[in-house]
Each structure stands twice: as structure tokens, then as C-alpha cells.
Image 1 (cartoon, rainbow over the protein chains, first blue to last red):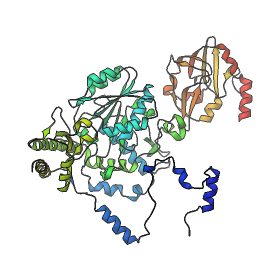
Image 2: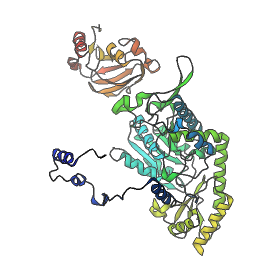
Image 3: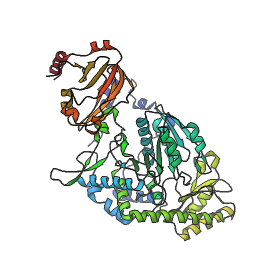
Image 4: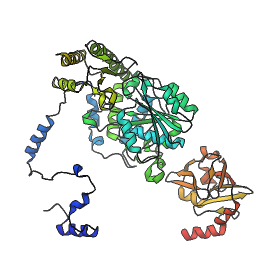
Length: 447
Length: 127
């Protein structure tokens, strides 16, 4: 049986109709630059199930999954309790398609409702949506939300916002007439003078991140106060686990809080799927993108859950919808919910304190190495910058051979920081691992 | 039966012209098509509006519908009572459920509106 429904004759007829006289299908791909096109489609002959399994296994073995990692940059190696996988892999949750439809099960809706409640508790904000794709898209959605709320189109973005998110922001908004201003980070902190220079009554929002990309902690309350005087909103992107010890976005006066939820029980797994969260002041709920689940009672008076305020969404509001998001990151949101419930309020505080203390220990160990300088201009959470005598890329290769993922080379995003590396330390890193890292780094530098 | 003294638009807004000012809302037909109204998004008072330009949104349990200005002018007042009780639009579309009061910029624009009998015919034809 032939699984390809089109005969050569069908193809020729279709090409004729759309005006490809030569009858050559390749003409359809002419618009794609040659270097981006596949060189050939020579597929090898079929393999048996056993052969495929063996081949895939050999590919998988090339991955270094047991590295002792000090890489962060927005995504972190935190411990995930076994119960997270056990709950999430229940077929009631795991096999169902994204809860797209109004008839999503009560169990799924309740899970999303509880997730929203946890995000509100964590950020201090009043309302949360059902989740978004990742930290970067959540930040973009928050910027659009601010533009719609204020009717203004200027956005000030702090240079401490994750450079990946900033790139995503520009990519998403390429064809919109939004005026972006980027302000620098000075001595590890958001540069107040620069923000003041651009902040005016045409500014929709100031986008900040805490801790910033370099790990530094800031208190943005003063910026929020100035923004509100001018009718601008404050969007704060946060690292959720850091809220165990740091001021919440609400305490700093943020109007919209977003962030990457990966640290809440989601494995790193090569970059995704991750989880974007968003929470805001209640007055902005009708401008929030995505789904929101509410609690209500059914006809018999029983507590039940429902997709609510759907008139914001595109299936009802069409082109005037708050966003084109019409789903949520349900399974990852469920992981975050299970994680937060297992760890609890005190647990999150403990993990945050452990991260912070271990990072301080790592600072001491690393700055004892000749030629390594730890940047100490600002207090940090679990991530900090070190300066090396040269480009760290060679060192990173050497340390990988010893089973250590050393850190993030900042030269990749900042031209003037080629000798700098960003080091992240989570609660998983032991005293021995930190000592081993320091030793390996010293060896790589000087022997 | 639609109130005789009002003027109407094809988008099912009614308007009562009172000297240099006008009050408008949505017709009984519009509210019954929308179903239970849950939220009204108002324009800012003081803002300028153009005849037949979109200026407010009425949300119901099943739709979000734009409200178009029946006449050009400036928003003087919005019906604050609707913020807490949007269902007034369903209960009293022509009286308590008014949406905006405006100052009329050009009285001649009244020619572009339907009178009650024309609107009734319009309803029958489009029904």
C-alpha cells in the first residue's frame, strides 16, 4: 500500500494550476536561501525495532547527564522530589490533551486553580493566569498587557533582564510600533539615573528582573513609586524559588509579575518544555492573557471549577482578544503545583536560604584561586560573576572532562564580558562538589 | 415595539438627542442577542469620538461586542452604575441601562440614523 496519496500526475496537475510551468516541485522552495535548504533527502533503508532502539541508545549515551553543574542563566538544577513524577505521570493528567476545551475535567481545572493560588501566594499578587509557555513569552505578554492597559507604547527594559528574554521580546514585537529603551546595569543594580532619564508620561511600563541576570539582588520599590506617579506600570520578572528569602514583586510595588517556573520541579531537559507564570493586580484581570480558572458552585451547591472571564479570549473576542494564547502549559504547571505543595512555604524558604549560603561558600572557595576575582558590588542570590585571566571557553572544556559544567560564559551575550563567567549554585551542590569545582578550576588555570 | 422618540443605528445602538447633548445605549434586541451582560468597558470621559467609531465594549456570558458611537462628539459621562451592576443593561436597555452621555459635535449627522419605524423594518428584514 502506498501511503503517499498524490500520484505524479496529481502533482503535475497541481503545479500547473499554481503556475509552475517547469513541473519541478523544487521551484516552490526557491524563496528559501540555498544554504538553509536540505542538501539531500537520502534516507537510509528501514531498521528493525531492535536496531532503532540500539541506535537511539547510542545517541542518548553521548549526553552527559550526570555533570555536576554550576550553569544557571535563568534555568537551574534544583532537586525534584520523586513524588512530582509519580503524581504527574498519572494517566488522568498525563495522557489528556491540553485542557483547551471548556469541558476540561474537574480534576484538571482544580489543579490549575490550585496552581494559580500557589503562584499568587508566592508572588504576593492578587490574580494569576493558568500559565504561559516560558519565562520569555510571559514577559512579552506582560509588556503587551501594559501597552493595552495604559494606551501607551514605550517600554523601558532594564539591562539586567535575561538577554534571552530581551531577544524574544524584540523578535515578537518586530512588526509592532513599540518604542524600546534599554537601560544599563551599573555596579550590579538597575541604573536609576538612566531609567529616570527615559521614564515619562508616555511610558507604558518599566521591565525589571530580580535577581537580575548577573544574580544581583535589587529592591525596585523606588522605581515602582516613580512609575506609578507617571501612570506607568512595573513588570517584574522573578526567579520563583528566590521569593523564599527575597521581597516579593507585590512588596516592591509591581503591577505584573512574571517568571520562568522551571525551578519549581521541572527538569532542565535540554531547554524545555518549561513554564511561564504571570500574576497581576486584580484590577488588570480582564487584560490578562490566557486562561483563568475560577472556583464556583454547581446547581447542587458543590464546590466546582470553571474556565472564567473567557470574553478576554480570542474564541469570543476575536481580534480584540488580550492575546492569541488560547491554552496553557498544563502539565508543567501541574509539576510546579505538586512541587510547591510538597516543599511548602517553609521548604521554599529553606531551599532559598541553602542556595544563597552555598553560593556564598562557593564565592569564598573560588576567590581563593589565583587570577579569579569574584564580583562583589551587589548582594546576590544563588548566582554570581567571576572574572578570569582570559576567555573561559577553554577552561569550560577541560572541566567538562572532569564531569563539571563550570558556568555560563558571559561573552556569549555581552561583548565586553569575554573574560567573565556566571556561576550558579543550587541546594543540590555539596560542599565536596564545590571544593572539587574550585580545585578543578585552579588546575585548569595553572597546571 | 421600539421607543418612538429615539434614533437607531444598524449596530443596534439607540440614541436620545437632548439639545446639544445625546445619551445612548444598546437596544432591547441587542441585549437579548447578547444574553446576560457581565461587564462594560467604558471610554475615558473627555475623549473625542467619531460617528460609527468603536468606543466601548459590552461583554456577556457568550460574547464581547463593540459599541459604536451613534454621533461624533465628546464623552461627557459614562453610566457608573453599570460598573457594579452591568445586568441593568438587560433589565432596562432604554432607561437605566444607558451607556454614555456625549456632547454632539455635528447635529447634521442625525440624518445617518434610523427613526423607530425604519429600525423596526430593519429588524424584520435582518431577522
